[in-house]
Image (tube, rainbow, N blue to C red; front, top):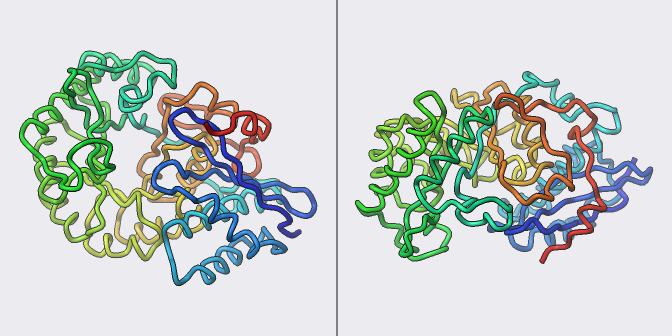
Length: 390
């Protein structure tokens, strides 16, 4: 069996684009993966297409060899878009390798350790502040809306949620505070002030009061501060018993200083590529939970990252804010690693997301691992092609 054709497909997903990779073998077997180029990865499809000649004619079931070959051929520009392109190819080849044997991808890694995977509702309230019109749901404008939505998430059986920093704007309506991504004033300085911290505490209080003491609350602060600001945020969140405070930084020593003074666990590393980038964070004991993006790293490399984290007594959680196929890929990772913490999942999305790939089954706050071959789900290529990006 040889790789005969590689195709990239893109579909409208409202405020973003869902991208898919289809790899076809010379005997007609097809493997799929999903990747993301809507958030800091512009041009990723072009990189995949540029790497395609390097893999045509190779055996997809020898996916480790193919991945190693691509790493060699991109060694002088390791990481970044090259790594994300290799990951997309690797994940599609894993789908083929499992389907060729009639087994789930998890079986290629020794089978699942768990078949029910605890999940948390990600981007709680954030999408409804920014993108409610795309989803056809009421917009969140005020703290009272946040509280009602938090109660709804709990009533739907979720045991945890993750939110971002939501503060009132000049019109009095909430907006997502994101200077680290340049969406409003505050970049590149990334400074904090007392008013911002007061609004953050009001936001967390509205959630905690609505869901009670037992439900998990995660706070994602991304790259929105420097070390000083992250330390002030860590102090501010102490009363709310966070499951974790999530921080993105490229300085492991700085993150370690925050972790030592924080009143709650610290999660980090979702933007890193490969074991080499994780290693200094582990050597500095800089985080309590390592967040691994299986879509950026590829499942094979992600398993190796998790093994490295395990050596340092660090549990892992997949970074998963994409479409349903990405969720299934991250679910295989979550099922197989021993040092698993909890799985991220976006519940809010455009209504037609489930046309591309069937939605995951979630019961009592747990994703039920599919048992079908490959990623366990089928991709509706016609539905993807019917919704070209706008």
